[in-house]
Image (cartoon, rainbow, N blue to C red; front, side, top):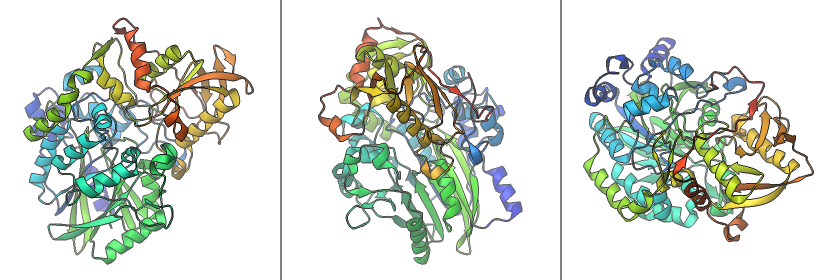
Length: 578
């Protein structure tokens, strides 16, 4: 894609969220506000709609964005590592508006009560139909992490999300957590349920034995007479971040060289537009965009960054657009291209928040969701307690929802220290809301959620923390895996993200006493990736936490966050202390 400096500045000005003058609508009723948000003028002749990381959330939810999303080195001060007012400034969005609530943690409780829940496939379906009607031929791309993250997705072996995505009109998708259902189940869905309806693409998933493509690397679809290639990039670190045995026969990886080959091949077959639907994580996408030429846009996921503006990356072949559409069916990205003389000449990008109060539920999708949930409704809605504080997960170091899990593991398992994975999926609850089994499953539902207790030396504990910290803060994005820091209960520590591997974690203490390298400590955790965990006979983590919740007498007090002391990087526009 080649843009002049003048065109580039015009694009930046136009490529922000819809409804920049939301002040006009801030006090309006839902219908008027929706008119301001969702009436997006058509542009160009090729359009892509993008959803990602919905994590099986079929119903509207609350979701608090992070107040900590640190960028270090060259990433400091750049998207996606901006939070709160810093992000709103770049997006040119006024504080206190609906967009500001969708994008940031600011005044979360007050804004959540004002604007209501977000997401929900019935409301997303309404928006998708609206955008497709205004943009004939538009394709809906799904960036993955779609089949995991809820009780019903786990209990139906992902069938609920497969059926919902077919009805939603997904055209092309790639994956990550999908693979945790195992190779056979993934292939069954792709080859049977999706046949003739949804293309599953992943250029970077190959067989271990002969290096054959497991899935189609790309598809070419014609939009209004323009051949468009959509290349898939699955999560490259699936066998590391998730159990290897679930994808034992498959190799992953970033695979820049093969990506370049696929771009060249698609162009050679006549593709005038090349889009990558990626589950790399945004920092990895930005680096890939600088190394691989010929890609018009990378529409990314994995790191759950709702990006209200597109990033433009230069490479030897021109420029590549990089976007990310958040998580939990909370956003829909809209990317419009003007294609002239067989190449992209201009574009517009919008990130539309999905407010359930502003978009009526699509009747057909609503009926499907009710049918899916009906056999499980009483189990899902069982109240395990009422929370007195806000519960959320997202943030580099900890969240109150994770703190609840840690507190439960420490108490029930009788451990000195507890670890909870730095997953970025999981929904939020407001003070006074019922803490149901559904919410607990939203925070814990995986195919390997076994609760564990083990003896670890102080040296091993430090190694664990150092390894995860390097995954998060390695200055080279290609060594990052996109999750957050492991959540820690019982143990206090300090962290300097700017230090080198092995030196970022220090001053580890338990009850005020320094951790001793050669001393053994009782450590609780969950979601082990080791294959032997399958046959160890351990309880599921949700059963452990449910025991703790039911012992609270119906009230769950506000959680006190166990946060590390962060050194070396502050102040930082990706860190807002609360």
